[in-house]
Image 1 (spheres, one colour):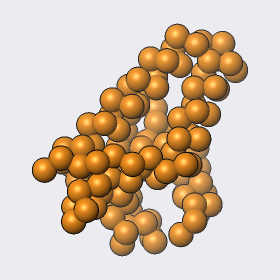
Image 2 (cartoon, one colour):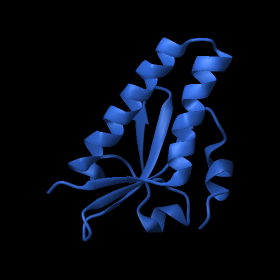
Image 3 (cartoon, rainbow, N blue to C red):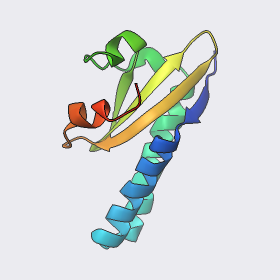
Image 4 (spheres, helix red, strand yellow):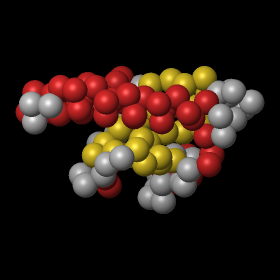
Length: 108
């Protein structure tokens, strides 16, 4: 089964912020491009067997089936839906952020 990948507005904003930070704050535009390519490659790989990554263990996300995939120093949070054959990417965050605090800010 092949899943369709859907990025939320927040996930798209996260990708843009990652690029801008690396390219403009760290002054490493080539590194920024390569990092986004690796994250995007990881996201696109979710079109097959998206349930291979672990479930996020905090509620209310656990009961909703939120999963997390590590890509370098970033975590991609997503919800696979086997019935509709879609994967919804919710957030992409730097691993050292306060993940629980950031997840509480998402519309539940």
